[in-house]
Length: 377
Image (cartoon, rainbow, N blue to C red):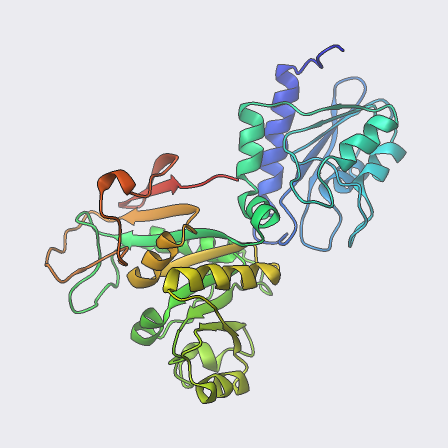
C-alpha cells in the first residue's frame, strides 16, 4: 500500500485550522475546539470555519457552508478527526460526503469512545482519501485540546495551577498580604484563564482571607459563561454572608466537603443555593481525586487551580496538576514565615520531585510567565 503524501501546503492548511480552532476557546466545552479549511479541486482556499460554541454547528459544516465555489473533488482540512455520531449536531462525515469532497486531512485523533476512528473509517468506506499526518502538527493539535483529551481518557478535568510569586518564591508575606505581587497585565491574563476554564478552585483559607468573587472580568468574554466556583472546604466553614454564597444563585458555587463536615452547615449552604459534594478518601490527596471524579461526571473538563498553597500541595500529592503557570514578579519579599506557592508534605528527595515534561517562558508586563507542562494527554 502506498504511503499518502503530505505536502508542505497540507501542513500549512492544518496550521491554519489550529488558528481557527482557538477562536472558539472558552465557548465550546464540553466539546473540543476545532477549525476547518476547505480547498477546491484547483488548490484554492474556498471556505473556512470553526466551532463557535457548544450546541452550535461543528467546524466542518461551518467551513463547507462558507464555501464560495463548488466543493466537488476538493479537500477539507480539520484540526480534529471528523465525527460520525449524532449529538446536538448531525455527523460531520455526512456533510463531507454530501459536499463531494474527495480528500480529508486531519491533524489529531478524537480519543472519546463514541468517536475514535469511526469518522475516518466511514469516510474511507465511501472512497474518500483520509490522511492523518503525524509529528509536530499532530502534537500541536493535541495540545490545543488537552482538557477534552484528559477528560475523555480519565473522566477527570484538566488542572491548570496558576500562581503569582516573587523572585524568592513567595506568594504572600508573613501577614498574608499578597496584593498585588503580579503586574496589571498578568492579572488581566489570569482573568482570561478564568474565562477559558469550566471551573476555578480555591481552598477555604483563600476564601476566608480574601472573600473573593472568583469571576472572570475581561472584555470579550462570553457574558453568560462564568466558571463554576469550587471551594475545597473540608468542614463547610464558608460564611453564609461571603461574596461567593451571596452570588451563588447567579454564578454557581460548589463546596467540596469531607465526611467531617457538620450536616447542619452543609444544609445551610444548600439552602443558599450552594451545591455541595462530600469527597471520599482518608487524606487530602485522595479527596482531591474523589472531587475531580465528581466534577468530571458533570462534564467539567478544565479546572483553574488558584490556591492557596495548602490546596496546591494536595493537588500535587494527588498527581493531578497537568499544567503549571507562574507569574514571576521582579520583587523579593524575604522572611522565614512568608508563604511559598506549594505546601503539603512535599518529597523527601530531589530525585522524587515533580518534574515537568517541558517549560516555556514569556514576558507579561514586568513579569516573567513560566508555563510548565507536567503531563500531556
